[in-house]
Amino acid sequence: MSQSPIASTARLPNVHAIGFTGDVHLGDEAMCRGAIDQFLRDKRAVAGRTVYGVSSIVAGASAVFAESCVALGVPLRVLLPVPRELLLKGYSSRERERFEHLIQRALSVETISGEDSADEQHYECGLQIVQQCQELLAVWDGRRPQDMSGPGDIVEFAKQIGRPVSWIHRDTGAVQELQRQSEQRPIYERELDFLNQLPPVGTAVDAADGPKGLAESWLAKLDANATQLAPEVRRLAALPIVFTALAAFVTAQEGRQGAQHSIVSSGVWSAAGAVLGTTAAVLPAVLRLAKRQALWVRVRTAAEVTRSVLALWDTPIRYQVVGQEILPELSGMVRTLDLLKAQAVGVSRVGLGEFRERYVEARLLDQKRYFSKQSELSAEMGRRYRLFSKVCTVSAILLSVWMFGSRTLMKVSYQVSGGAWLSMVSSALFQLATVAGALLVVNECERRERRYQEIHLSLANWEVELRAFRTWPPVIEVVNKIERALLVELLEWRSLLQNMKMPRN
Image (cartoon, rainbow, N blue to C red; front, side, top):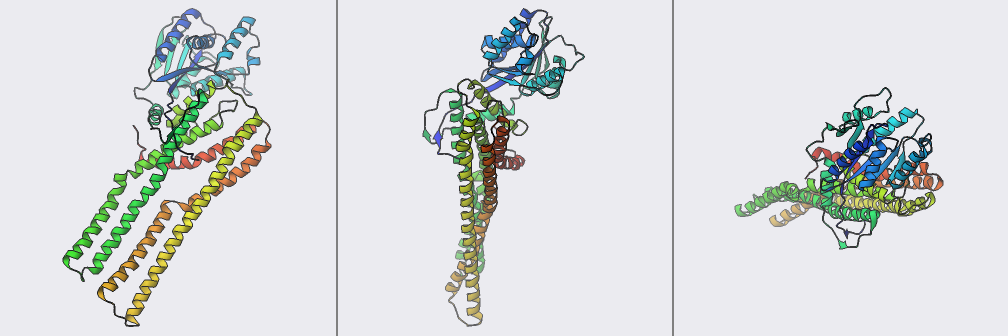
């Protein structure tokens, strides 16, 4: 999954999505427009974040909100309850012109439609707006209508799931906060701050222009930092094991030779054993192994989620491999990347066939090669550790048997120092076998080999499916399976590290 480290100083802005719901009929449209404009200006004035709107476009308040976004230069994402052809039925020519003008200036247009009634489709669209925003603005008279498609029901849903809600009264223009935002900065903003502060690593390169160029440069920075952290964690994790084995070996020698050496010599062995044992005990804390592992998981997860976003960059619909419910701390990063993708929609479009071929060549086949290679490396590493452990164990047993037999059966008399050194060698071989076995466990050679083989086989099967499909829905479904499979290993690590309370800023 990793590439050659390259230095990137890319930073992603924190984004703040403002959802909107409102009445179809407005008493004083100019007054409501002024109140909406002022609300958007106030939100945009908050330093350190980019504001964008999420709204439907139907007659009335939502069209006014969309026009305010366009006039103020606030990016707009449009969600429609039904396809535009159905929505425009019954509209006057002026309303149609107004609708098309806003659609053309929206960053993205997504249709939320199904087999439900018109009221239910509008209601579902309102719920989707709430789920895709971080704050809801409502313009209505404050009353709950009989049907389920009114803004009152959308506001109630937003309050139930904890979204901040601001209300502009459609008749008086009064602004009221129905549910305040927490004083504490959200976890997704703090996590994006942490990722933005990661240093550039490796050789400097020029970042490409445009939204996709920024996303690729962002991936390069995350990837380089994660690659730098990962090898250190496994190598450093072996040091406490080695020092523990050395401490046990030295302490054993002090016990064997204490009666045969001077008090000073025994004291040296004892002191050496104590120093090595203490070193083994404090090394994990000094090296901050737990924190290094947690940091690696944080950065690598962000990198792989970004890689998945880029792999799906050319799909014609808004699509997320992992949602906020799975990685809440990365929801801010994903939301920013989604906004960048929406900004790039008009820059380049690719057809299904071209997307499929690009994805297979640049993503799927690359990952097949990666997991095949990693499976072979894990298998080879496991073989080496097992062979080394077996050789040391067999050698130690043979040496011990030979020493015992020569002393008891053959009546061979060793010099005191010679016998001590042979005993020391035997003990050292047993300790080396133990260290090799421990490193086999620490590096998870067998588990990684099996896991990599499983993923490689799944990728091969999905490649056949992907090449066979000729329409977007099944292609997206297969791509979804692939991307989730590539992320599952990291999600498992992340789940395990939750109990360690991953370090925060």
